[in-house]
Length: 103
Length: 462
Image 1 (cartoon, rainbow over the protein chains, first blue to last red):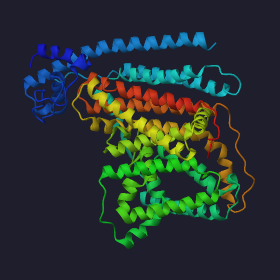
Image 2 (cartoon, rainbow over the protein chains, first blue to last red):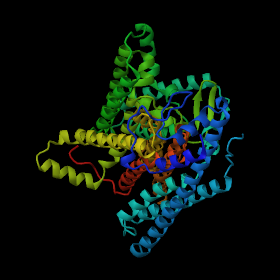
Image 3 (cartoon, one colour):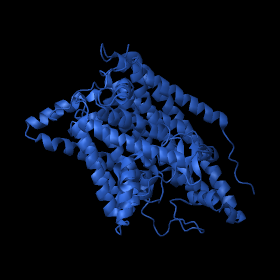
Image 4 (cartoon, one colour):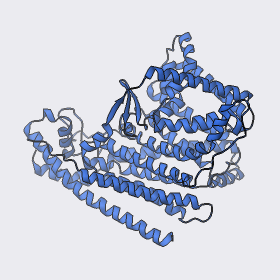
């Protein structure tokens, strides 16, 4: 499991539009080899393996977990920026509305 | 190879929490001023008041999404301390107090004065039990299993009958409990239970008879653990409380954090939580001028008044239930995850209990405090009580109600956030799974705030 594959997974994970909406448990979904749980993306599978079966993992699987974690952190960073923008918009939107309506 | 570092982002978290408190404070102040001003002149239009409440919930979701450190989230909801307590003594005291209270209700209900505010049965049940005691179940801890007089009084029956062979599946038991709860809400709203002491005492006897039939049908344990709507209701409220009963004794947790455990385990349990949330909402809804005009319009267009109230109760329950299941199914797609919608619905349903508790506090705090002198008066001489008095309360206290509704929602947002982190492997996935549920919560908040902000009127046709 290399960093490149997890990077491309992050796109699939990020674009949860109705077209890429997961079918119910498809046969070719990435599965956890330890508990058999299916996951929509390999990145989520790698994260699950790292969180729930860390002691049983071999080195390459641990590397995959680290890579998945890093790639997710990057996406989280961009999510945070958007969340912050939404908060600022919400705050100033209400500030203006109160200034106009509730004087 | 080291695990990727999950450093504590203490400063960021603290910042988010402070910001949350600030937004909450501002909104509560607006709410308070609206309520105070409603007699004279509306300073803030209703739509702005409601959208501010909705935005507070939405903003608190966005702020919670900044807290992505798994260890920190888990440390908050897993924190607990055992508290030593004389459990046996407490249980016996509870049983005695419960049975004594039941006796007072029966005696004064049938033989006491007919003025409701001077009658001990009325004030003990409504002020002492349904308002004040219910508050203790979510503010302190659930003591109803010890206190419950129906449980104590039907125990000899269980011994005599030697238990029951029939057992319901937990799911069916929870659905039965949901049906009983809706029936209770309907009966409470349409009957003059709060004004007629004789009727109230008869209803108490009726409930004891129902409990006896239930104990004979499914056994003492299953009736009071699964089916009895009041026991399930107080247990649900109790899971919001800081004091929890565990196998090792009483344990102290942060408020509402028990809700991140598997409190709800069946689809029927999900329905019960929704019915509880909708029941408190419905109770307030029928007292609004908006409902009064809708009801008059419906009855004048030919709908019988008898059908109107139960129909509205059922329709509202189905709407709330549908909305919640829509949120659970949508969570699978937005996250995305292959976890069953059933499992998601069960894991996140307990977060709604914090909302229900906040709404109960908003509804009953002023009521309980203002009528507390009647309770003391009626209890000091049950058969010949002094003239009823009410406490004059400062105006800002009604702002506490609005704050309670918002605080309940903020707790619910945090509980759902913590549950998502517990349930899903991806941090971003956990945040995305909350989109639909947050929307549903915004809808529930705006509904509750609308009711809290309305003047109370008598429901028509009752």
